Amino acid sequence: MGVGKSTLTERLSKELGYAAFFEEFAENIFLPRFYKNKKRWAFHSQTYFLINKMEQLVEIKKLKKNIVQDSFLAADIASYVQAQYELGYMEKAEWALYRRLYGLKKDDLPEPNLIVFLTASTPAIFDRIKKRKRTYETNHGKQSLLRYLEVLQRLNRGWIDKMKNRCRVVEVDTTAQNYFADKTEWAKLVAKIKAYEKI
Image 1 (cartoon, rainbow, N blue to C red):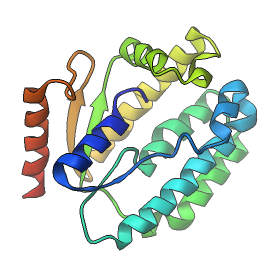
Image 2: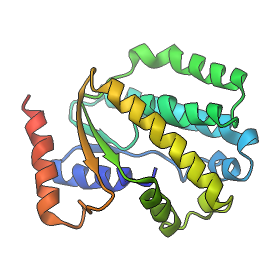
Image 3: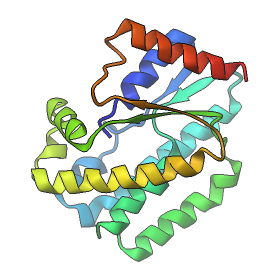
Protein backbone atom coordinates (compact mmCIF):
# COMPACT_ATOMS: atom_id res chain seq x y z
CA MET A 1 0.00 0.00 0.00
CA GLY A 2 1.54 3.26 -1.16
CA VAL A 3 4.87 1.76 -2.24
CA GLY A 4 4.36 1.98 -6.02
CA LYS A 5 3.09 -1.49 -7.00
CA SER A 6 0.72 -0.30 -9.73
CA THR A 7 3.28 2.09 -11.20
CA LEU A 8 5.91 -0.65 -11.25
CA THR A 9 3.49 -3.10 -12.89
CA GLU A 10 2.61 -0.63 -15.63
CA ARG A 11 6.24 0.30 -16.31
CA LEU A 12 7.49 -3.30 -16.36
CA SER A 13 4.66 -4.33 -18.66
CA LYS A 14 5.68 -1.69 -21.19
CA GLU A 15 9.42 -2.24 -20.76
CA LEU A 16 9.41 -6.04 -20.96
CA GLY A 17 6.27 -6.73 -22.97
CA TYR A 18 4.57 -8.61 -20.13
CA ALA A 19 0.80 -8.87 -19.78
CA ALA A 20 -0.24 -6.67 -16.84
CA PHE A 21 -2.83 -7.48 -14.18
CA PHE A 22 -3.91 -4.83 -11.69
CA GLU A 23 -5.81 -4.91 -8.43
CA GLU A 24 -9.26 -3.52 -9.20
CA PHE A 25 -9.54 -1.18 -6.21
CA ALA A 26 -11.60 1.39 -8.14
CA GLU A 27 -14.19 -1.27 -9.01
CA ASN A 28 -14.43 -2.54 -5.43
CA ILE A 29 -17.64 -0.85 -4.26
CA PHE A 30 -17.01 -2.11 -0.72
CA LEU A 31 -13.62 -0.39 -0.30
CA PRO A 32 -14.90 3.16 0.39
CA ARG A 33 -17.50 1.63 2.70
CA PHE A 34 -14.73 -0.23 4.53
CA TYR A 35 -12.92 3.00 5.34
CA LYS A 36 -16.15 4.47 6.73
CA ASN A 37 -17.09 1.39 8.78
CA LYS A 38 -14.30 -1.17 8.95
CA LYS A 39 -16.05 -3.78 11.07
CA ARG A 40 -19.10 -3.76 8.83
CA TRP A 41 -17.32 -3.99 5.46
CA ALA A 42 -13.85 -5.55 5.95
CA PHE A 43 -14.98 -9.05 5.01
CA HIS A 44 -16.92 -7.83 1.96
CA SER A 45 -14.04 -5.72 0.68
CA GLN A 46 -11.43 -8.46 1.08
CA THR A 47 -13.73 -11.08 -0.44
CA TYR A 48 -14.17 -8.86 -3.50
CA PHE A 49 -10.39 -8.77 -3.93
CA LEU A 50 -10.20 -12.53 -3.36
CA ILE A 51 -12.67 -13.26 -6.16
CA ASN A 52 -11.11 -10.69 -8.48
CA LYS A 53 -7.59 -12.08 -8.04
CA MET A 54 -8.73 -15.69 -8.33
CA GLU A 55 -10.37 -14.78 -11.65
CA GLN A 56 -7.13 -13.11 -12.75
CA LEU A 57 -5.05 -16.14 -11.76
CA VAL A 58 -7.34 -18.48 -13.71
CA GLU A 59 -6.82 -16.24 -16.76
CA ILE A 60 -3.07 -16.04 -16.09
CA LYS A 61 -2.82 -19.82 -15.99
CA LYS A 62 -4.15 -19.97 -19.56
CA LEU A 63 -1.68 -17.44 -20.95
CA LYS A 64 1.42 -18.50 -22.86
CA LYS A 65 3.45 -15.41 -22.01
CA ASN A 66 5.09 -13.72 -19.05
CA ILE A 67 2.87 -11.62 -16.82
CA VAL A 68 3.32 -9.05 -14.08
CA GLN A 69 0.71 -8.63 -11.35
CA ASP A 70 0.68 -5.70 -8.95
CA SER A 71 -0.65 -7.58 -5.93
CA PHE A 72 -0.26 -11.30 -5.28
CA LEU A 73 -3.24 -13.07 -3.69
CA ALA A 74 -1.17 -14.90 -1.07
CA ALA A 75 0.09 -11.52 0.15
CA ASP A 76 -3.50 -10.42 0.75
CA ILE A 77 -4.11 -13.38 3.03
CA ALA A 78 -0.86 -13.01 4.93
CA SER A 79 -1.05 -9.23 5.36
CA TYR A 80 -4.25 -7.38 4.46
CA VAL A 81 -6.74 -10.02 5.60
CA GLN A 82 -4.66 -10.91 8.65
CA ALA A 83 -4.48 -7.20 9.53
CA GLN A 84 -8.28 -6.93 9.43
CA TYR A 85 -8.50 -9.82 11.87
CA GLU A 86 -5.75 -8.60 14.21
CA LEU A 87 -7.18 -5.09 14.37
CA GLY A 88 -10.66 -6.40 15.11
CA TYR A 89 -12.23 -5.31 11.82
CA MET A 90 -12.96 -8.90 10.77
CA GLU A 91 -14.53 -11.37 13.16
CA LYS A 92 -12.93 -14.77 13.71
CA ALA A 93 -15.80 -16.49 11.87
CA GLU A 94 -15.37 -14.14 8.88
CA TRP A 95 -11.61 -14.65 8.86
CA ALA A 96 -12.07 -18.44 8.96
CA LEU A 97 -14.68 -18.33 6.17
CA TYR A 98 -12.38 -16.24 3.98
CA ARG A 99 -9.57 -18.76 4.43
CA ARG A 100 -11.96 -21.61 3.55
CA LEU A 101 -12.96 -19.82 0.35
CA TYR A 102 -9.32 -19.33 -0.58
CA GLY A 103 -8.55 -22.96 0.25
CA LEU A 104 -11.09 -24.18 -2.31
CA LYS A 105 -8.88 -23.00 -5.19
CA LYS A 106 -5.40 -22.30 -3.86
CA ASP A 107 -3.88 -25.59 -5.06
CA ASP A 108 -5.02 -24.86 -8.62
CA LEU A 109 -3.60 -21.33 -8.75
CA PRO A 110 -0.22 -20.51 -10.33
CA GLU A 111 2.70 -19.44 -8.13
CA PRO A 112 5.05 -16.56 -8.99
CA ASN A 113 8.61 -17.36 -10.02
CA LEU A 114 9.81 -13.87 -9.06
CA ILE A 115 8.51 -11.28 -6.60
CA VAL A 116 9.66 -7.65 -6.74
CA PHE A 117 9.01 -6.61 -3.15
CA LEU A 118 8.70 -2.84 -2.78
CA THR A 119 9.24 -1.32 0.65
CA ALA A 120 9.13 2.16 2.15
CA SER A 121 9.07 3.65 5.62
CA THR A 122 5.67 4.09 7.26
CA PRO A 123 5.92 7.94 7.21
CA ALA A 124 6.80 7.85 3.49
CA ILE A 125 3.83 5.60 2.73
CA PHE A 126 1.51 7.84 4.76
CA ASP A 127 2.65 10.92 2.82
CA ARG A 128 2.11 9.16 -0.53
CA ILE A 129 -1.38 8.05 0.46
CA LYS A 130 -2.25 11.66 1.31
CA LYS A 131 -0.88 12.89 -2.03
CA ARG A 132 -2.85 10.41 -4.16
CA LYS A 133 -6.06 11.96 -2.79
CA ARG A 134 -8.27 8.92 -2.42
CA THR A 135 -10.40 10.67 0.16
CA TYR A 136 -11.80 7.48 1.65
CA GLU A 137 -8.28 6.38 2.64
CA THR A 138 -7.52 9.44 4.76
CA ASN A 139 -10.87 10.56 6.18
CA HIS A 140 -10.68 8.36 9.27
CA GLY A 141 -7.75 10.04 11.04
CA LYS A 142 -3.97 10.01 10.95
CA GLN A 143 -3.38 7.77 13.97
CA SER A 144 -5.81 5.13 12.75
CA LEU A 145 -4.16 5.00 9.33
CA LEU A 146 -0.65 4.94 10.80
CA ARG A 147 -1.60 2.04 13.06
CA TYR A 148 -3.03 0.16 10.08
CA LEU A 149 0.12 0.80 8.05
CA GLU A 150 2.40 -0.37 10.86
CA VAL A 151 0.49 -3.64 11.16
CA LEU A 152 0.68 -4.13 7.38
CA GLN A 153 4.41 -3.43 7.40
CA ARG A 154 5.02 -6.11 10.04
CA LEU A 155 2.84 -8.70 8.33
CA ASN A 156 4.27 -8.00 4.87
CA ARG A 157 7.79 -8.45 6.22
CA GLY A 158 6.89 -11.78 7.79
CA TRP A 159 5.25 -12.96 4.57
CA ILE A 160 8.09 -12.03 2.23
CA ASP A 161 10.69 -13.62 4.49
CA LYS A 162 8.79 -16.90 4.19
CA MET A 163 8.34 -16.50 0.43
CA LYS A 164 12.11 -16.30 -0.03
CA ASN A 165 12.14 -20.06 0.54
CA ARG A 166 9.61 -20.62 -2.27
CA CYS A 167 10.63 -18.28 -5.08
CA ARG A 168 13.15 -15.61 -6.05
CA VAL A 169 12.69 -12.18 -4.45
CA VAL A 170 14.09 -8.80 -5.50
CA GLU A 171 13.65 -6.29 -2.68
CA VAL A 172 13.53 -2.58 -3.50
CA ASP A 173 13.41 0.19 -0.89
CA THR A 174 11.54 3.14 -2.40
CA THR A 175 11.66 5.41 0.66
CA ALA A 176 14.26 7.82 -0.67
CA GLN A 177 14.92 6.55 -4.20
CA ASN A 178 12.43 7.23 -6.99
CA TYR A 179 13.18 4.33 -9.30
CA PHE A 180 10.57 5.51 -11.78
CA ALA A 181 12.05 8.98 -12.27
CA ASP A 182 15.76 8.08 -12.07
CA LYS A 183 16.65 6.49 -15.43
CA THR A 184 19.88 4.98 -14.13
CA GLU A 185 18.26 3.28 -11.14
CA TRP A 186 15.34 2.13 -13.28
CA ALA A 187 17.72 0.56 -15.79
CA LYS A 188 19.49 -1.29 -12.94
CA LEU A 189 16.20 -2.66 -11.63
CA VAL A 190 15.06 -3.81 -15.08
CA ALA A 191 18.45 -5.46 -15.71
CA LYS A 192 18.14 -7.34 -12.42
CA ILE A 193 14.69 -8.60 -13.36
CA LYS A 194 15.86 -9.62 -16.84
CA ALA A 195 18.72 -11.55 -15.26
CA TYR A 196 16.21 -13.63 -13.30
CA GLU A 197 14.40 -14.46 -16.54
CA LYS A 198 17.43 -16.42 -17.66
CA ILE A 199 17.76 -18.53 -14.49
